[in-house]
Amino acid sequence: MVDIVYFAWVRERIGLARETLQTDAATVADLVAELCARDPRYAAAFADTSALRVALDQELSDFDAPLGGVREVAFFPPMTGG
Image (cartoon, rainbow, N blue to C red; front, top):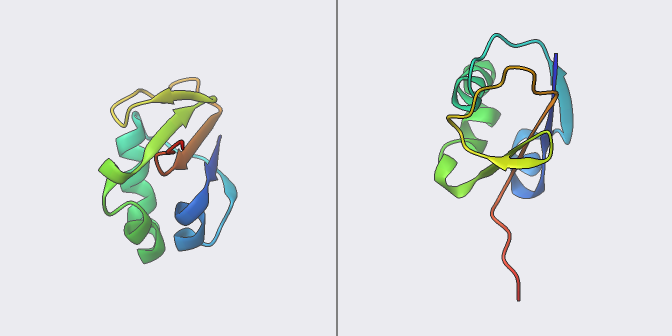
């Protein structure tokens, strides 16, 4: 089981702040593909992954990162300071 957390406009497009899933995905990209196949809301949220960041167990990561042993995956837009 993996907890998936959505922030900002990702949460708004999907309509959930968090969910827990059983997945066989090997990488973050595989997980995104699984989610997109579930519902059009996910496909809309993940249409341009270059506009998203991902953290695995609260550490910034990449979409090609393996999910083995990961307990939490968080998706969010890039943050800007100012």
